[in-house]
Length: 95
Image (cartoon, rainbow, N blue to C red; front, side, top):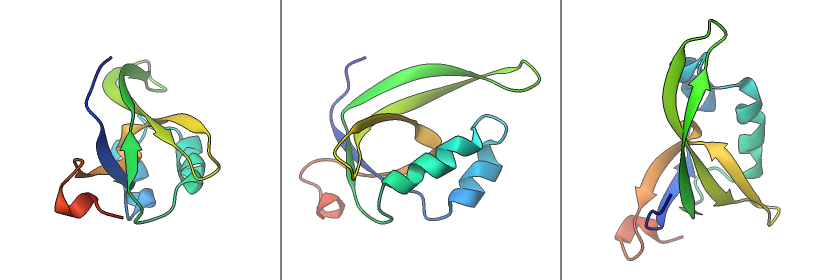
């Protein structure tokens, strides 16, 4: 899926993010969020639409972001862990 680059940062309260989206988000995503620094901006390089299945078999629409991690890898990760942090050239998108 094509999308322009935009920036996100890890949500300040990951436990709240987990509660807000449970059971749509696996607790393993909370552990994967540790690959990112709090308060740092990250470019979203691609967005992928996904369907998440709950334990009960219900479906929920969501998305995953392709983001470079602190260990210089790329990771597809659930969008619910992040919040929008600006576009290139915007004031709040500076490091």
